[in-house]
Image (cartoon, rainbow, N blue to C red; front, side, top):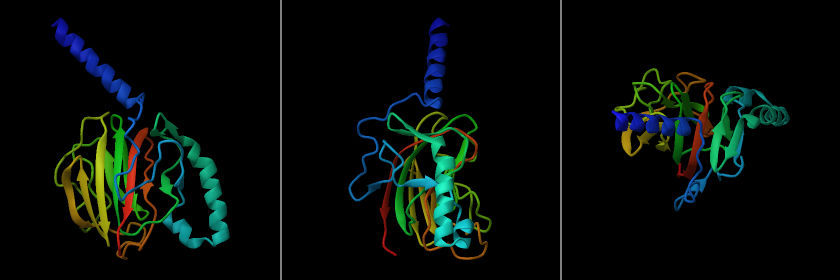
Amino acid sequence: MKLQALSSIAAIIVLAIAVNGDEKASPSDNTPPPGFTALFNGKDLSNWQGLVELPDRKKLTPEQLEAKQKQANEKYLPHWTIKDGILNYDGHGQSLQTAKDYGNFELYVDWRIGKKGDSGIYLRGNPQVQIWDNPRGSGGLYNNKKHPSDPTKVADKPVGEWNTFHIIMKGDEVTVYLNGELVVDKVPLENYWEPGQPLPAKGPIELQHHGDKLWFKNIYVKELPD
């Protein structure tokens, strides 16, 4: 009984450390594999900016967009901080998006959430490859209405542990591997902002705000030909 009690306490401590983000990136983290570019360098928010959603971007002149982007950076970036090589989000503010737009690409993202955590990865500015603590599992194209929205299997690791997405986007089709398991196989991602219309040819990659603390590292992208 004593050994079981000690084991349970140790497990609780390990989970608490993971969920609270008291962890350092390893020396090999944030180093892209051959052919990929690190979107997150483990040191600062180079390559990232505060959220300005696609519908807003389309309505603004270049001068207006520049001003709105400056406001978004000032308001939202303070909520995304780097500690020991890990990108931390405090659950306030808004989503983080790449400063560059991407068309066809291959993407790796390591992510971690807490209990009942909820987030996602926007592709070309459209929601989303789902991240959450839910029995349905992560990786599905949550906002799809006509095409499948759920993953084909649950491949999430226990809450508090790191998970890895490998996402491939070609045209409007998305393939998602979660922790090495195929969970979405060439499923079209639907246009959220303009239902029934094709996806934009390019758009930002976004880390979604949903009011929960989040942790990210090892974010790598490789652009693919049209």
